[in-house]
Amino acid sequence: MSGGTQNRAIVVTYPDEFARNEIAELAKAAGYEVVEVVTQREIIRSEYGVGSGKAQELEGKVADTKSDTIIIDESVTSAQANKLASLTHAAVVDRERLILNIFARRAATTEAKLQVKLAELRYELPRARDAVRYSVRGEQAGFMGMGEYAVDVRFRDLKRQMVFVKEKLEKSRTVRDLHTSQRRKLGVPFVSLAGYTSSGKTTLFNRLASESKEESPNLFTTLATTTRMVTFPKSKKRILLSDTVGFISRLPTYLVESFKSTLDELRYADLVLLMVDVSESIESIRIKLTSCRETLNELEVDPERMLLVLNKVDLLDSRSRSRIEADPLFRDYHCVKVSATRGDGLHQLRTRIMESINSKAALQPKKK
Ligand SMILES: Nc1nc2c(ncn2[C@@H]2O[C@H](COP(=O)(O)OP(=O)(O)OP(=O)(O)O)[C@@H](O)[C@H]2O)c(=O)[nH]1
Ligand SMILES: [Mg+2]
Image (cartoon, rainbow, N blue to C red; front, side):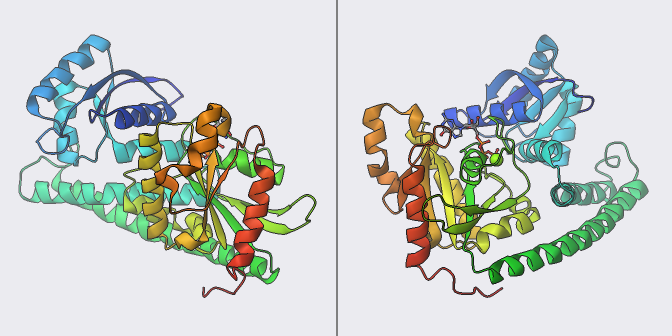
């Protein structure tokens, strides 16, 4: 997409409310105008990604709505995407590509840009490899019209670029590690904010650190980590607080891996504040919490080091507000209720942060 023009997109997703809402939000965050949402029980099984009947239906809808893009809420192969694209005369963008597009739009720091580049290369590489295989077997006339030789060159070029980007990231990682060890020498506890995209991490960060970083209803507003020394009022206790990139369900592992150096903040934190937007339906909360826990498990964050921050309580009626933390969903966690925008519960949050840190001998040097 270029020049900020709004592309009109038809979205294909699963027939459940959570999936529908989320992919529509993602599409919006990537700059698309969603003109129609089409649902399908199985998305990845056939030659077009969608069933052939559905593919034909899409062909008609693209023409009727004058759309130029079909967004598929799954990962499809390049062969499937190409087939559907040539049938419908629309660009086909899958879920991974869509998330990568959002990341690419948002990445502001050099490191974030490199991480996005690495993720893009990881996305392209298996697709280029498939193209090599097809062209060698003569099943596909090259990749997007390229011949066998060109496909091979492209594959090698992607690999070379990957080595280059990894080296650069390794360098910025060394600098980051140095900062981390310098900070650790200060003996100030590390606290990291984590949570689903749009749960309110940056809003809380700004509140606690008296900052004004960009917070917005768009998904993936934050892509780089910011760390600030925060001194609590009254107690004058100090913590180092980090804001991080948001999580999302069905995030491919390579994307998490590409953002590893950013997410390392979480690995080494003494305490992780896991933000949960409790203004949503219990089903959405459950899906998002499960997805966050999976990502945190991958990053080897021990549940002992987590404090659940139930955010946006200002949007609950008083009955739900008084009962929310008793929901079985939060049974295994220590929870604090807050409203990051209004400031409710911040005093209790600060107290719980200090209690959690002190109770866990959290300042023991961790192996690194
Ligand atoms: N009503 C209400 N809205 C909130 C609260 N906290 C955050 N928000 C809103 O939720 C939206 C997302 O907030 P952010 O702080 O940008 O969320 P984030 O978790 O940093 O999101 P990413 O950076 O995209 O991962 C913004 O529109 C905020 O104004 C709250 O306590 N109450
Ligand atoms: Mg943010």
